[in-house]
Image (cartoon, rainbow, N blue to C red; front, side, top):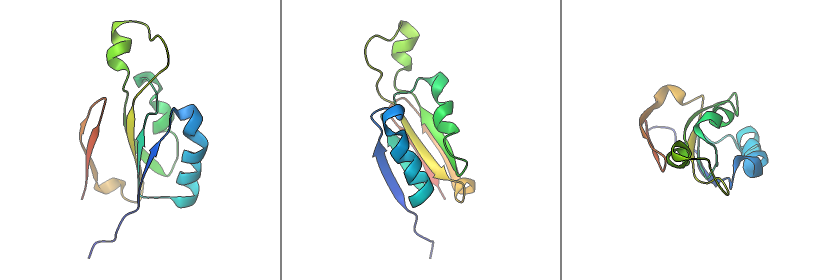
Length: 108
């Protein structure tokens, strides 16, 4: 029988606001998978999530690209999803698709 994995979901309300709890989850709880919503990062800033922890790999997409491509962002940033996979399962992860509102990944 396969070993069960721990999965968590966290709405950051922006990486700046949610970073401390996300760091705590990564360091103390160490779930195998963390689903992240509302990181509010543009595609040029996704590196902040991708380099967030040495113990995780990250699949991420921005929710703002269609607005930023057309003009300057006015008002508050929004959207963005990511999945953080612990490195102990990273060899078993395959990204199927990544869009501004969702990411599909397969763990085998």
